[in-house]
Image 1 (cartoon, rainbow, N blue to C red):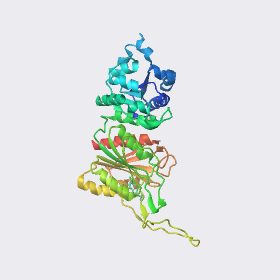
Image 2: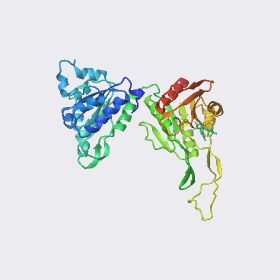
Image 3: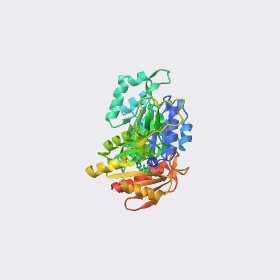
Image 4: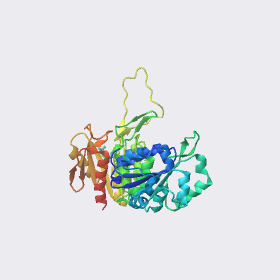
Length: 408
Ligand code: CTP
């Protein structure tokens, strides 16, 4: 996992109660550490029956704490210092017993006493048998915790260790990570801003089974959406064809054709601060979409499809923007295989953009489907900023830095 800006210099206390999902939490601790957070694991006694503290120490590179540490004379009131210095406390898995203790302010182990002493946001990830979860006592405890501002994610529905299916499974580590990002991003530099981001390629139907598509993977647009969420923005992600998972917290709208993407973009832009068009929109669509699958005969040796232009979405945005002055900032991407700068500058001007990221898609280490990109940022004021080869996540950060400056 690549380092994530949001996690740099963040101190996270990961409280671990005793449930079978503990083995998955070792992966969560590892991911948080790889993302750049300083992770202190605090295990209850029953958690240590499932997985040894050593596992957590190994993946975080820091001592994993247990109740024995509460009474150590060489650590100065560890629960207070942990609770005070944490940017976030996350309790995963949170068992019915630990939920009950927290709801009643009980503080009989290092995990509960640390949580009681904390001033930072607290996230709880319940995991237990379905019957225990639906029990009125547990539900009342969770409601109490929620009413005090504690965030709860899950539990999910599915198979549990008992072999039964129901609501009680711990949410998967990647989703917990996404949830944590949203909580840590609150009050970030883009809080209160709405961004519309497009990503992926469009599909233009020829008949019910065939389409015209392109090689876009959606990676750059999804990285921008995630990076904006990490800065606290509200993000509408309008996605064409892509296999990528939705960044947690994004409002995702799936579209197929350029026409459909145009309609959704125009609607979403009405109250947006920024549009970032990272999608690879088809320029042509079939003049006629057949209702039935087009068949060949034994004599068919050639087949022609007449293509007509699709709407230019950025042109349509420009027209709406001239009327309603929204979005304030519009950023495009230019996919080029030659004359990169000249072609991109022409697009910037004709589409009325504030910034364009010019992309040489003929390079093997940049553009479609790979994880890296090399772009040059051109602005409406004539500025040219060539960026070195970097990950699409890093490109996203640079584009957002420029966008933030344009938003003012
Ligand atoms: N774009 C758009 N609507 C289209 C085609 C492209 O809004 N019908 C947007 C893209 O999302 C991108 C920018 O316009 O942000 C430039 O896209 P690109 O494919 O590089 O250029 P085109 O305008 O399609 O021009 P050409 O294909 O001739 O290079």
